[in-house]
Image (cartoon, rainbow, N blue to C red; front, side):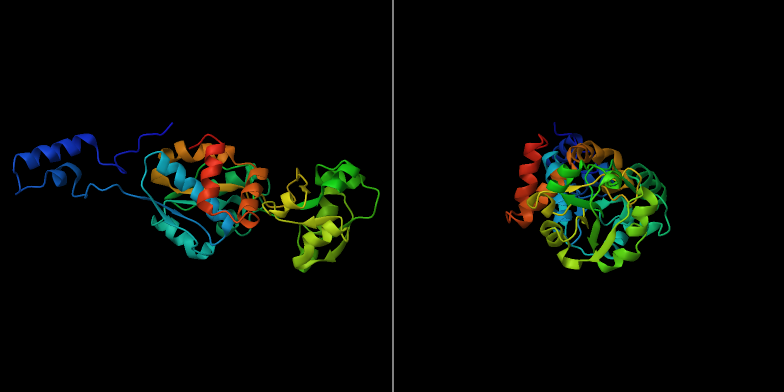
Length: 305
């Protein structure tokens, strides 16, 4: 059900009546609207929504935008801004009101040495790390982060749902990923220390998914929102011990608007699942749908429009 925007967004009915009455009375020498509102023009003040220059992030931003418009808000889109160094100053200054972010990556932006790893710990640390004037709404289960992923066939053959299950696999395990993964704390040494899983490593780089599907490696470092998870029938293994830094989708918002916008945005976060985010990305990369059409279809499918 659409909510009623606050007076910050829409000219109140009483103000409009007062203005009409003053005009009818011929009071051209005074401005009743200025007296009523302190000099505002009376036009709806837009909610400015930003996005990264990344198709998945723009789709989420467009979902926010259409939902807010459906709730009666005026929205200004400021999409495809670029990297975090470019847009976060705009968010902190209040020039951008709402931005879809990723919890772990944003936490590291403010606290590079953070040791938080699980979704709940990262979210709690992020709330405390944000500068005055901005905050976050509820995070989504959907994420865009590092993972260890296997083919659906390999998962079924070995009863795999979690990284921990790899310890029981009897065939030799080879992990594929970018060359730098060999030295990362969540690479082969992290697998051994955290889960007791011993693997060989192969630097597969840009062909990691292709190498996994071809059977050249049987575990791959893949981002959780990669559309090939759906199109290539892959399974992201759960990470109960927090080997990877959780990066759940989370809306960053002007703190003055947080309670107001939460009524519209929190239900979106609750409805957006990991599989759902991958499906949205497939619609972009494979079906070549526009962000606008993808957002409308998703909102309608989830009874949010």
